[in-house]
Amino acid sequence: MDGELLLVVLSSVAQQEVENISSNVKKGLAMKMSRGEIVGFAGAPGYDYDPQTKTLSVNEEEAKIVRYIFRRYIEGMGAHVIARELEQMGALTNRGNKSWYDTTVMGIIKNEKYKGDLLQGKTFTVDPISKRRLGNLGEVDQYLMKDHHEAIITEEEWEQAQEILKRRSACHSNANMDPSKYREQYSRRYSFSCLIKCGFCGSSLTRRSWHSGSRYNKTVWMCIAASKYGKKNCPECKAIPEAVLESAFVESYRIITNDHKDVLEEFLQRTEEALRSKTTAQNIEAVKKELAQLDNKMQRLLDMHLEQKIDFGTYEDKKLEIEREQQLKTTELLQLQGEAGVEKDLRKRIDAMRKLLTDAPTLEKFDRKVFESIVEKVIVGGYDEARNADPSMITFVYKTGFKDKKNGDDFKPPRRNSKSKKNVVTS
Image (cartoon, rainbow, N blue to C red):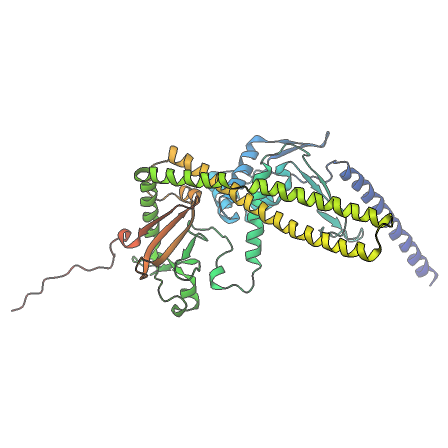
């Protein structure tokens, strides 16, 4: 009994000693992280780490891959597609592997180091005995150092990528998905994934293979409301072959960049003039000044109350009134900032479209990169001027807002199962 008691006491003392050492080590690491020192760096593609000086330097060869990943992600590609492209390019990971995985690509997209910042304390040790580590969701402090090292991408590119990531994550978490939201997970596995909509019900179109395994195999795009939930949900729609969509885009691109270049240039100029006439930036500054005035007003009100120039009831009433005004102005400011972001994005699209018009490549066949760089979405089906349903109508909506309509029937290839008529001889 004495031996067991002694063992329990010694075990308790040993455990307490381990916990004390662990606590001291954590404090030391926290002090280093607060000073901006890199602790436990596990490596990041695009950067070389010097353990002597504990600094990061850009590895230009790997940095090219990082920039490519962010550029393709902003263009609309998913992690799976980017990983396959990197393998086809023969790109190597920072560990020299030829295989790329979705998780590797997403790890790069989420890593703040590529914009020059350093966030430490992303994980923490639950206890020193099991040494189990978990992601830090606020249990312990994190340390963010802005402009800690040389950036590989710009702050704007980082924000664009995170906005896309946030939007796609929201789509994944949408458990009660309705037909119009179906396929909004941005898989981007195919050229038209998440970019093609039904002109009748607004649902996304999904890719299907007809007569798979036979010589009559054909890839088509169908309205998900009709194919998944029944034709009665979208009776006007019809499946459209993928080859028709590709041929229609090639023709639309040729006409815009050659025959209708002047028309599109005029459209771009009108759009630019409309943007210049907007006073969003001035309105933002005006609202900021009003918010600053309200802050000063709140401070003066507090001073008057502390100096006993007004009673507590009057102070509370005036305070609530100012807080309501602040809330309204804050909401207005957020709306204006959102509009400013949309205008900035539209200006970038106009510049990209004008550059395309200046040195547009000639397309002999469908090119996915060209398509994704200039097209916002494709609408299949719609109504003509007489309000008659036209399931063959294809509308390409370019990123500047310019629209070009095509008749899908003009691009249908001949049917492979058509039979030539035979002359019948009667006696």
